[in-house]
Length: 390
Image (cartoon, rainbow, N blue to C red; front, side, top):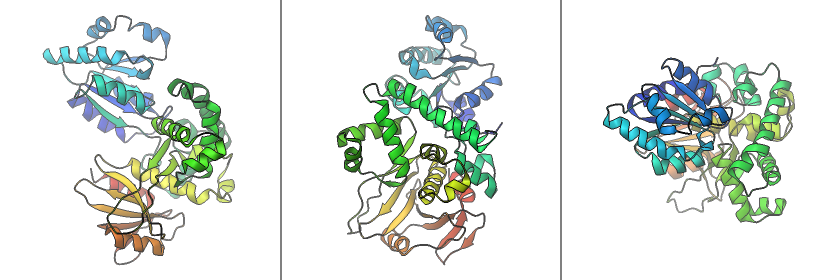
């Protein structure tokens, strides 16, 4: 069992809020985490993809009133969206009776439905927490573990598989399940075959600027369709759209977002990369590492910090710009190598936006000065430093 960093945040949220929603992609460990928390609270667990569990909520108010003294875990709640309105009434009645915290732990595999449904029904009654697949700060702090996580990705069943071959087989099944089950559920008018081709194209172009017109031409669909398909993959928490940072610097700036498949193991599965040896010789290796690093660092951000990238048409570029609460900016260059040499474009970009701190996130473990203003830091340590700013 790998302890999850989010567990403490969930427990704290249950002490102050009536409902807590854990949002994350399918198979990221939401159910395991919820059951661990529920064991200590004599929780009632309902899997709303199971017909028998759904039938227990045919008279939802009666059932929930009968377990008012227990935490109720509702897994895959998007399968019963009408339940949100019922939860609102139960929560409001409980507040009048002095039972106003720790009532419901809600799990969902897609942000789109949870945000839409609970935004209408549970505003002021719910806290949202994102659970990503395993991060470098959860699985270990040595280079071999980090490389394994990069190759296999962070989905627990993939990372913990008995071999690289078994891990790759699991990830291929994961992709197939999304295409055959979840895509039709959440994007009823979107052909799964088009999503599969787009998903694979995004893997080949990991970390590239989103060019909807070029993708549309390759898929023989409209640019508007590409935007809709990418929106769905973002809503399913499978793709990250990293926005560009706009600054008043008197220069022509890139305006398109960068697109990353969030889990590096899924990138490798879509491209048929079975081992670390094959990955090392593949053209995507550098961009795959960049995506792995971006996801590691962005997932560590405390709210309300946010991440962008900075790039000018002339070539000045910062891979990741983090803006913390209060406005302090960090500029981060990502390097696959163990060294921390920065490009001229990074220096030029830093002159444009004047970040408070400048880092090179490298593949090693050491921390050292690159120059008087730039530090070289291992990915694990930088992720921990970002997390500690909360």
